[in-house]
Amino acid sequence: MLTFINKSMVLCICPNPSIDCYAELEHLVLGSANRIQSLQEYPGGKGTHVALALAEMKVDVTLFGFWAGSSGHWISEACKKRNVAIKGPKITGSNRKCYTFRSKDRDLNATELMEPGPSIKQADWMLFIEQLEKNIELSDMVSLSGSWPKGTPENAAYQVAEICRKKGKRLFLDCSGIQLRNALESKFHTLHLNEHESEEIFGSSSIDVAFEKLRGIVDYVALTQGKKGLYLAYPKGKIHALKSLDRTISTVGSGDCLTAGLIYAVLKNKEPEEIARYGAAFGAANCITEDLGMLRKEHIVEFLPQTILKPIA
Image (tube, rainbow, N blue to C red; front, side, top):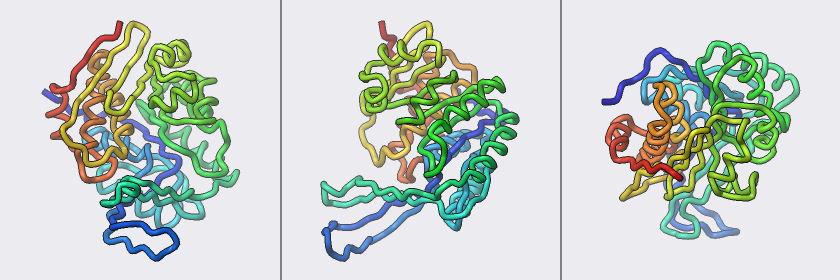
């Protein structure tokens, strides 16, 4: 039986929040006027999805980011309605919008367009770090997910990891590119990456290669391979977890919800096998909801016993 957490607090850092939009249209004709038939908007950004998934499971969670303009106000208010507390500096400019197009046109369906978001000044960054240190101090656990706005240092994720390390806080990291490369100069609890990110950083999508490269840097490596499921490695072993689905509505945010599942299981002091189970179940639950990047508690209850675990030799 699932037991929900009420006291532990997780700080979810989303440096580049967004408004995620479902845009419906028949076809897209380049060089011509195209009319969107309907538009649905949701609070977005990878860290936002993590926070919303944890809030759905009754975890006390705070979302920390740069908040800019009317878009930032809309995102933060939408999250507050879902029991997510909001922290972080307000800056000039406007938070971005990300569009996912849905169409009968195969070439267009699931195409994404992402705005850049605000540009960060030095004063914005200093205020961000100052406020972040205080909020990390008050947290039991920290997650950092997604991209950074223009103007932030290339070692921003590394700086966050170092703050968590020095304060003894467990950090769950999900980022890519130069931010990930620099973050690996620090040490933290869990790294979540997909097969493409693993290939880019380590030259291989193998969990064995990834964990060997990360030995001594992280406690857990969570490597996702889409429909093939989750591979979780830790010092004493490796596990594969898979929840098969008969239908999928949208995979947007499924990796973020998977991160939330890992965090949730660690909060509940679960063994590694169950951490993998929760991660896979959370990721799958996101795929069958209409709302972008969100999951439902009842689906988690249903999916946990259906998630298949297999130890890896």
